Amino acid sequence: MTMASMPPDPTRLVDIFAIQQLKARYFRLMDTKQWDAMRTLFTDDMCFYYDSAMLPTVTEPRNRSADEFIASVSRLLATAVTVHHGHTVEIDLTGERTATGIWAMFDRVEGTHDGRFFEGQGHYHERYEKGEDQRWRIKELRLTRLRYAPMPQSRDYRPASPDGRQDATQ
Image (cartoon, rainbow, N blue to C red; front, side, top):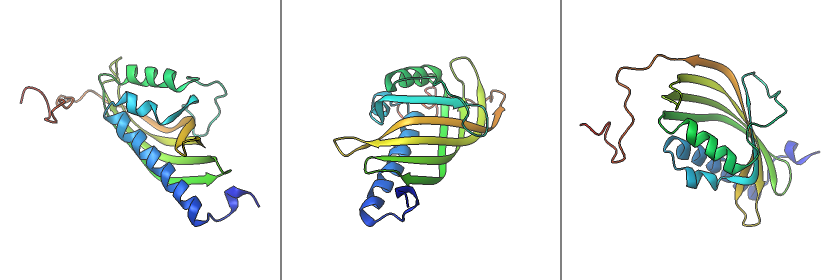
């Protein structure tokens, strides 16, 4: 029987909860553009893969380090308003310091650096690693898409201002 198929003991439930918190932070920090804080969620050698297919098939990562991933996503989303949600997580503890997870996801992205507006659904397929500091981090992130729907730009599209108001002209 592998660790993935064994029911977790109470101490391992703490690890599962920590991984869930890690991913919740990922979504929040991406949507609020806190790139430095977001960088701490990954191992240095983190790899990111993007697949427009339903299941992971891509063999070459788009990004081969956490720094490269943060630079790429922060550039893409610099002017965008984003909403990312993760749902129905499946976490398997594969070792004392390793785990895998699959998250159903929804994202809405309005106004990327190249002017795209879209909504999508799919899955995050991830591998996690627990560091010497006992913190879980994302080691591999694979984003797959079930649906990608371009949207027209909304007439009332306005990024929130830093003080929390809808826009700086109010």
